[in-house]
Length: 197
Image (cartoon, rainbow, N blue to C red; front, side):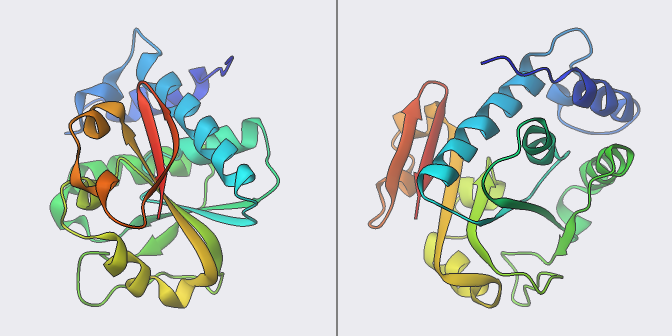
């Protein structure tokens, strides 16, 4: 798959300087990390189209790679991004993410803390698909699928499908999420697994 991620790499690498973020964002000499994110989103979007989704939300949008990939090859669905405005658990990374998205001109819907008691999403839109890609609260078990669906009820359609994508390593290690009832593996090829719930 040919996906040129040079622009997003350059913007993110520039904003990563002097910021306390994960080391992969400093990928100045390699394009591996950014290309990997881009290719992963391309496969996630293939699943969205296979499932005939029309309004897709990337929850926890990070630096905006999902929008970057969508703009590179628009799909048959509308695309939105959101990120949690609760900065208490990653102050510098939230500032970094906001700065990168701002420079790229990407709008991002503000969301409350999905693991907290008073979750809100600052939109009137309704989504029939919500993507969680390497989403820490789901990865580490801080929230489960049923709680996500309940908390997002005001913002989703009745037939909404949630997608969770993560490293194949989590699946190989039998990470409990992937073996829960109601979870379907939609795509599985190293290094990526995409599941629906």
